[in-house]
Length: 362
Ligand code: NAD
Ligand code: IPM
Ligand code: MN
Image (cartoon, rainbow, N blue to C red; front, side):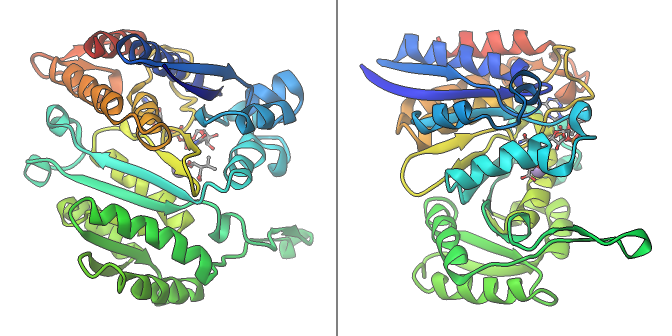
């Protein structure tokens, strides 16, 4: 029997609601495959502030350190927005977790399921036949982390400032991951930057170009981020892998998510060198729908599938989860965010679609 340790960090808002469904899916995988997932829950984000006085308690970090992977829900919400910025859940828990575990590589696959073509915000003829793109986002550098950053001065001169920086080494390691991923897919990589304005992007583009020489079978192109945002809604099928820095990847991946029908569909994997990783939906704690039992758990469930694929090398089980999600969508199950009112669609709550996915795993 294979044995893996999973740190379970549900967090805030819809986090605990969708996490419960992902854990049911792990139970189903245990029943079907010869594997045990030893799960240790830990507080994070606003929930941890309320219970333990800070967003990322040492006990939580220790539980993550002892684990083979982290399954993360989401953090943040109106209740904690008036705290000093450095104590808020996003900045005091999520970003430090990414930095502590050197999770420099964030994979966000945006795939349109055939059953959901109608839920996309784009016209049918643009979506028809589906698309499958992968956003590779650098996650531990750039404007999110570089120093100095802060707020200083008073009155009209009071100034907020952030620093955007990328070293060649940082760009090199994320480029290698992106080219390797493209090599296993449709062999196209589009690097997104703002090299017409930003020095970081000048370095970024040069390094990506140089690393690209090691992957002659991958077709490399470069695109300014403003054009990329436009091209993504104009003709998403032109893209295979989109390689982005931290902030551009944040924005482009939300846009890509919506093309698939809902932010609630988009999983993510945050990886380091080696097999350790943190797996979390690309979207947030959705305070507007939290507590109603109507959130879409698919992003969280597909994040669990990515954990099996990337950290545990359980490819068959990951494929089985993905297939179960597809089957349940084909059977017409829809949470509110992907419900169109077409014949054959059933509008259901979080638990019901989770149960259907569990049943489909068998
Ligand atoms: P959000 O992603 O939480 O929500 C944006 C919209 O998408 C909302 O209308 C929400 O209802 C919808 N949505 C998101 N996930 C959904 C799901 N699973 N099912 C159905 N609908 C879903 O973004 P926001 O409103 O800008 O941010 C809310 C809070 O979440 C903020 O505190 C933000 O900082 C935080 N956040 C956290 C993470 C994270 O922990 N990884 C990511 C993004 C935002
Ligand atoms: C995401 C989120 C986070 C980010 C926030 C909550 C810090 O938006 O995971 O996409 O910007 O990386
Ligand atoms: Mn985001």
